[in-house]
Length: 166
Length: 111
Image (cartoon, rainbow over all chains, first blue to last red; front, top):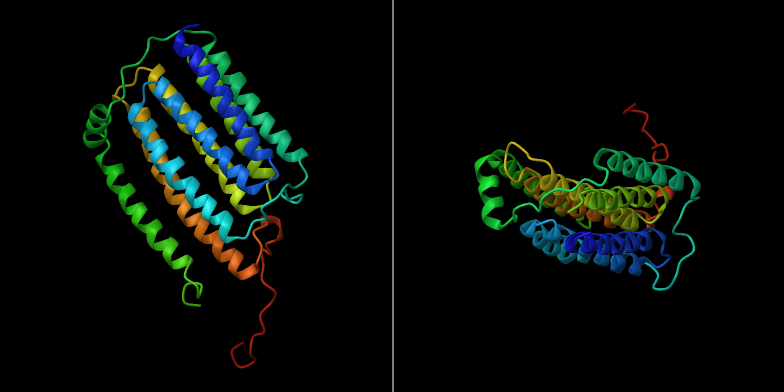
């Protein structure tokens, strides 16, 4: 166990614990706040895995933008402040499929990698990622910008008060 | 560095997200669970980028960036839909949404 292993175990435990609270808490607002903890722990995991740029993009976009949007939605749909009892459907099917897929994938990956050791990767600085994006992945990058524009227009049209000109 | 640790973390996160998607009734909480699943996939991509020697450099990290951007777009459109649903039906419980409208009266001369 090296320092990075200990860090990864600790951050993974934080991420999994916070994710468990996200899917189990009875307070809508607290689910959003636990989501911040889970996403932040995953961003720290990216840092340990030497993906610097992705970690900061995760903090900016997910913790900064997506969670704020989700909390806005919680407020705009007038979610109750306290605990609510009707947030969950019957749980057995979700438990079955969630545990099955999670543990199945975990068993598959443990079987594939065992306790193998790899050398620490080179740091994923903005220069390296930028070179990769603008040399091999230019076309997907441009297509993504079109997708973002389409999503922007779609969100504006859908959320118009008159329901998109009905 | 043992890559099995982040891999198992990602698998468990994915399972928890799947549980949330299946069990939650509130549409906003459902979107949060989808975010958890997307993060698990991103974690797999980043870890395999650090583990597997790929032909192109930093491919996993570039893909993770793309997934993050698509997730941001998804949340934007998804929340617009949730807000419109709340405006029309005054509820965001996904299992109370009627999949078919009640039949519309068609005037005789049109039909």
